[in-house]
Every structure is written in C-alpha cells, then in structure tokens.
Image 1 (tube, helix red, strand yellow):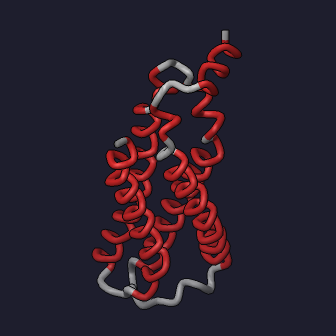
Image 2 (cartoon, helix red, strand yellow):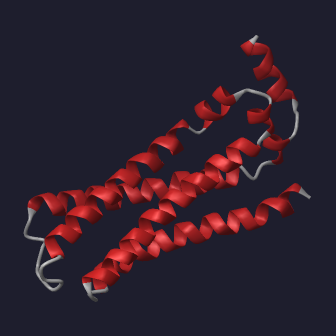
Length: 161
C-alpha cells in the first residue's frame, strides 16, 4: 500500500534526474539561439531545485520527522543534502559563466578558457555523485520503515532522552 503511494513520486524523481542527465549530455550540441539555450539551462537548474524540494517533502512526510527526530534524518542523509547543494551551485556557476562567454556569438569557441574547462570538468564529475546519492536517497526513502513506528526508531528515541 505504501509502496504504491510512493511509486509516482519515485517516477517524478527519476524524471527529474533524467532531464538533468539529458541536458548535461547534450546541451553543448544544441547550438540554437542564446535565448533557447538560456531557457534549457534554467530548466536544468529548476529540475535540480525541484528534486531537492521533493526530497525535503519526503523527509517531512516520514514518521521520524513527525516524531521530532529530525537529527536522525539529517545525519542519515547529510551527504546527499551536501552533494545536492554543491551540485546546484556548480551548475548555476557553470551556466552563468557559459552564457556570459557565449552571449555575443553562440558559435564562438569558449573552451580555450582554462577556468571554464576546469569548472566544466568539476561540474560533470560532481554530477556523477549527484546522480548516485540522489537515486540512493530516493530508494531509501521508499522504505516503509521510515513511515511507521518501528523498533529502531524507538531505540533512537530512547538515545535522545
């Protein structure tokens, strides 16, 4: 029953990851007008924000959060929260710099700039970590143990007293 309720949310999270992966992979090949490219980059950034919002909404829906044990969730998913934040910052930074360099001429060669190349490589490397940790978090949050009272939650609650 709970798994069925969570399935559409999981599909939404996978869709957001797929859009980000697709745009990361093919945005350089889409040399259209600058405005179209800008809209695609904004869509990518918005998808990352929506992905983070969905995870936090799932946090708020857990029994652990409702029982007041927010520390457990934060400690359990600290790496994912950090990776999502860092990846979003890297994407926004890369997109702003990328569009700044390309705005005057969409077909100009911008990869001679060492800084943009370095940021590009760092952002693409961070994307791998983002995909891994985000997907792992999606699957972990599908576990019914987070949405009902169980022994391990009681033990954690006893530790906090």
